[in-house]
Image (cartoon, rainbow, N blue to C red; front, side, top):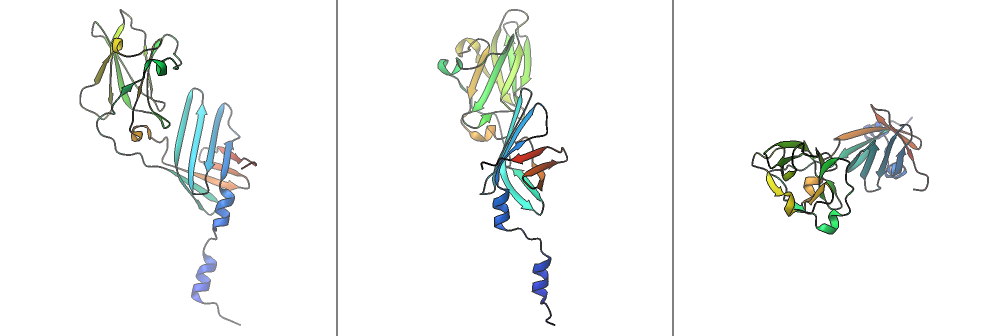
Length: 225
């Protein structure tokens, strides 16, 4: 009887994960077991991913890389870059402002990077001519809201990042292009819109489905991939 070499035994004990298996996992998945929640996960053959989730009025997006470990898929988001100071804000022009959907009975500020997304964690302050203020913080969509001023009107708005200890950058409302009660700004540097909603996610593989842990969200693979 032939004796197996130590190298052969070692190889036999290793988990088998081939490139072919990875290509079988790659594809477009959609959430199937959550009411009033929509989500999709795209695992690309180059081991990058895109993820999207919408629940109620909130929507979240993430991107990064994925890898297979046995019967699991691990997705890890791209690291959010370190940010200092506050972004440079470029007001929407009149034509761009007209395309904004206005909220009911509220003022709205939107800050975004084109083709990337909203800029989160910006403190936004509305001030009236009596010095009264109202503050909100932009969410993951880059949106902050304020009620209509109780007395008079809001005259200016100040914006700065939460980690910036300098004064706000102030804008007089009369110098902007508000459409209705909405004001919007572009930011050129994409890193300001790269905040990720999570760091990593583990999904269990079962035939054409992936189930996230520990929240048990089931994603089914699209057959037309």
